[in-house]
Image: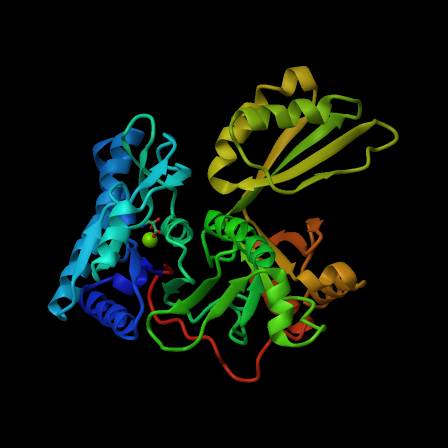
Amino acid sequence: MQKYGGSSVADAAGIKRVAQRIVNTKKAGHQVVVVVSAMGDTTDELIDLANEVSPLPPARELDMLLTAGERISMAVLAMAIQNLGHEARSFTGSQAGVITDAEHGRAKIIDVTPGRIEAAIGEGAIAIVAGFQGVSQTTKDITTLGRGGSDTTAVALAVALEADVCEIYSDVDGIFTADPRIEPRARKVPRISYEETLEMAAQGAKILHLRCVEYARRYGMPIHVRSSFSEKEGTWVVKAEDVVQEEGSMEAAIITGVAHDRSQAKITVVGVPDKPGEAAAIFRAVAEAQINIDMIVQNVSAAATSLTDISFTLPRGEGQTAMTALSRLQETVGFDSLQYDDSVGKVSIVGAGMSSSPGISARFFEALSEAGVNIEMISTSEIRVSVVVAETQVEAAVNAAHAAFDLGSDEIEAVVYGGTGR
Ligand code: ASP
Ligand code: MG
């Protein structure tokens, strides 16, 4: 199973290059199923187009429109492969048996019935599948899986077809210890566990679609993240026990990588009466607005007033909705005011080894302080420490953490081949 992202198939030259690569894999004796994303920035352009004709495009029609992007790449790629003398057949998500629920724009895969794909590869053809889309089991309408969803299509199909591996091709050579765009010393991680990858992805590292990693973990499908622009071995995302085993030592690195996220905002509810039920009311209102919050900090209340401040972070795009929902509560909860800050960023260190080594947070915070970075909020999990800092200090914080945990390589390893990401 191979999946090619938008930057790998951005133009005719890219499509021909990918076609050649697929043919080489086939010639090496493999049965090949390929999932493709839309060419380059097609999805964004289609969204812009929709917004030009309607301020609020209906979700069903938006999905119908966006799935066209992947259908263009699958057909053109199949043509390019046939031109190289090999049989290739393209399939929409629906034809490939990707069955989802009916949630347009963020549909979940509930079943994969790839009969037609099996038949195609059984006949010796290369099957090309449009990523990011499926068909609703109940409404029979065409759905999309959410931005970046082709990764999930690939893993789901790989599992259904019992593939040996799911190779995910993009414009970088693998998963790096930090984003090479801001940390030039970033090193490629040879192997990383599903859990660490999930934390990195959830903390803003733009490596893999979160749900694709969850899916792969559930079924133990190995993912090989690599570049379509080079032949280099990429990063293997595998079970935690396989990471240590393969590295042949009990001393896997304590910190695997540093992730950062500039898409968050912070809301502070100022002067909340310190009594039972207040936090519940605040977060109930946010939840009812369908907003996913991330970090929460409640300060100790000032003894004199018994008022406290509660801050939390959330995706920037949801800031307005959350502020509106909260301001409706001002009377009943009786807080003083609301503050909104969208010039924040989050920096996280992730590593399975940290649960058994003390002092990791101290080292992280010391490095930040030496770099003059002020910490606004902190949160941790068993394998992660995250801080919220001013957006202007994100880069400095990433560089400081990267150096503090000796993640850098001596030479520049990271090459970014393509354009805007995936
Ligand atoms: N083309 C879709 C997007 O850009 C899906 C994908 O690239 O995985 O979100
Ligand atoms: Mg894309």
